[in-house]
Image (cartoon, rainbow, N blue to C red; front, side, top):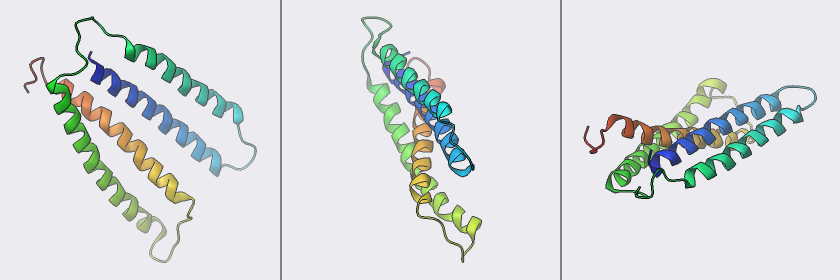
Amino acid sequence: MNKTQKGALFTLGIAVLLLAFGVIIFIDMLSPGARPTTLIKVWSLLIWAFMAISAVLLRRKQSPAEPDFDERDNAVKKNAVLVSFVSVWVLLVAASIIPCFIVGDGGSIPVCLLPIINLGVFLIVMLICPVAILAQYRWRNKNGEK
């Protein structure tokens, strides 16, 4: 596994943890009563532990002869960024249209939800990019051919 694949797995893991954490926080915001601070502390600790362990594992090479990146890695990253860029626009259009269906033409959306919607788009794109990288490596053989 090369450095690009390790980075994609790390990003995917962090994105999944942050998305789950965001869902927990959002549900906690909407629920009445006291806030479960221990759950939030446990999730924060889990995210920090994952980041620390991943940082150590990302820096380790499988062999001293392993290059940091090559032309295939650059092509894979370029295609993944293109997929992410297209997905940003698709998700922003969806984030603009879906509230119209939910609240209707006469309804209003609280201003505090707009950053949450944009953060949700960001986290989904953060999931799409490493998935695109890992999918490209999965579909190609060692020579970079399909």
